[in-house]
Amino acid sequence: MSIIFVAIVLITLFGVAGCASWTAEQKFPPAGAFMEIDGERMHVLDAGPRDSEKPTVILIHGASANLLDMKLALGDELAKTRRVIMIDRPGRGYSTRGGEGHRLESQANAIKAVADKLNVKKPVVVGQSFGGAVALNYALQYQDDMRGVVLLAPVSHEWPGGVAWYNNVSEWPIAGFLLRRIFVPIYGQLSAEKNIAGSFAPNSAPERYYEKSGLALLFRASDFKANAADIAHLKEQIIEQQDRYGSLRLPVAVVTGTEDMAVSPKIHSRQLERDIPDAELILLPDTGHALHHAETQKIIQIIDDMPERAGG
Image 1 (cartoon, rainbow, N blue to C red):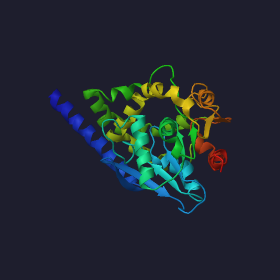
Image 2: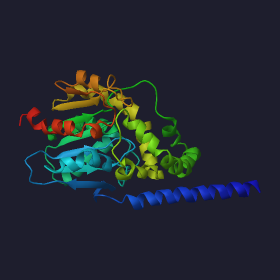
Image 3: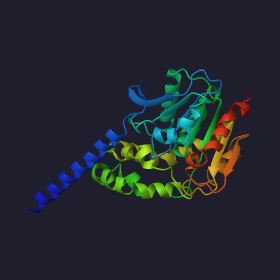
Image 4: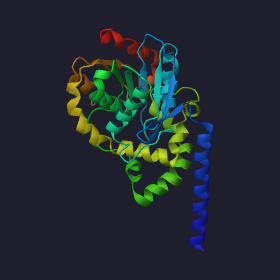
């Protein structure tokens, strides 16, 4: 009887979790179009005027988010005056990825391939948090094909400690499967509003951020698995690339909030200023990790200034 009871409970939980994932996709369908890159599907939103004299901007979102986060914070406003390319990173949102998709190099290569297919020349690449790590890798590979890079609270250097337990557990065969298929789809959505408030502190999240950002997509099993793998394998890759930042010669703006409790300005942004020749560090007082939402206009001005930093 106990085995039957457990089976009924598990089936019920699987059903509830599956319904939650299905509902998320119905509420937040793809906002852009799909492109095939090396056998994988990339979800891309190409917005704004093609004939603008301003350089095209590529926006790379952070962990636990998708392209809607950057669209809400920066993309819609930037697209009023220039072309803006917003991309779900490989494995996130509606983009797919292969076995090495968690690699920063793989993600940067996929984004560059999208830019090439769209005939984007000399873009300004903007990355936030984990997206900043991807943007740095992009610059390390392709700086000659860029106008500049804007790094928003970027993860850039080795940090003490590890990552949240569930990011590692997600890769375990049985526990990870149950975590992704039952616990995350149900508990994730129940705790989302509280977690949003914490990630935006000391600033406030935009009104109805959960609904507008498509955050519920994270709690699908495939999306959570990719996000967890990104985070679990990030530190080892940061250690691999952090000694190469001195080779960057393109214009670099590093922007961070002084009250960022998620990605230490001292460990990351301030060290980038020391490592990259002529990098400009811009500190935003009383601002936390979600600086792209809290200080949108200041960041857009920094992006606007990139052609001047690049010499026109």
